[in-house]
Length: 481
Image (tube, rainbow, N blue to C red; front, side, top):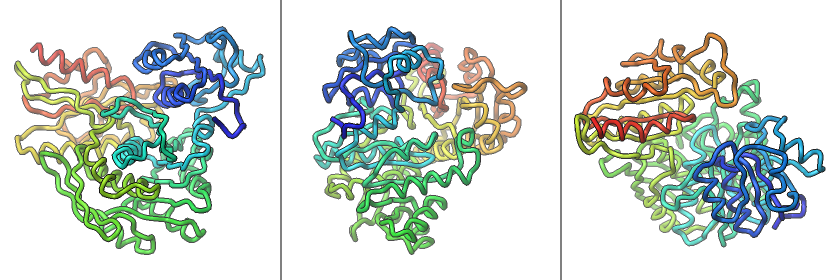
């Protein structure tokens, strides 16, 4: 099952219900390992893993290590999320049980496969998911581990029969340096996670280090429409690394020294979806994406190149990409109000939590309503994520959110961070130029929204915290109006 570095016969995962952890747990179970774990609350992933045979406790306690009747051979943890005084970590140390990061476990699981790693500040989950959908349509049945749940298959991980393993490479704590990719796709590079890296220079450097971990015959795939990803490609060419670029015709012309793998010739936004015309392998290809936005066209081009590099047939890959219907919380359609005062209003939910992501999603929403031609407006309920990120990018968040017609900004979701005295979401709302409301009371969000919407509008709940819970609540309460 592994190269012998870690014994994966009995694995205990702390925080097993998380998006990343639940995925690797699913693969371990499929490979016959004994899996135990714990989490702070019951959830859909926890219930699914339990049904597959995992032993899971709600709450953290030292005795959870023996849920299967014997001690695990290894304990897995996300160091960013789990405090070091966690009783299960302390118990593991007392018993001399190795404690490893999720990225280390994923590296072990990928050993012996052709590794396709998707990296970048934004778009990792969408691009990884697109690559998986394309490869599945090509009959290659890849193993995969992604940070979101594919809408069509309803899962975030799979132990496949093919020789390819597709996964996200997370840069937030430099864990992407654990992998040895055969194909590495870099969607974009923009300073983030500066609480970990300290400087933008250090953040950029981790992508250079990642590219240098490619296997000798591996290929770096970079988005030419992103100046920092393109610059990475140019530096890697100078080092003798094989590089392919993808992007619009204009971007390709600006970076003509990088071999062009996929050119986006044109994009049109129609009511049925986003229609992209690409040129790949001297062939003209048309893809109709069900997910709106130019950023999704770029992600799709990167996914197609990744699929080609591991042996997928182009026509089958394109077919799979055209059938791809998204990932949970990535412009995910949640429903339409069917009756009452706000009939026709639609609700979508998105994970965007960085200004660039917010901009891309709101541009896509604008393109969608304009293509429909019904005069709908774009209304956003946004929840900032992390005090450090909100402080760092408050003006950029305000500019991005101003692309909407109306915005409601909830209080900051601190996640792993403690509140910062004197800092609230007002540092964003004070600079928003469209209609805006600061709503510090989560329970009042729907009522605040009610005064700013009309039938047919497109409403987006947006953020990496618990704002996603509001999508269903909005539909329920407006339906009852």
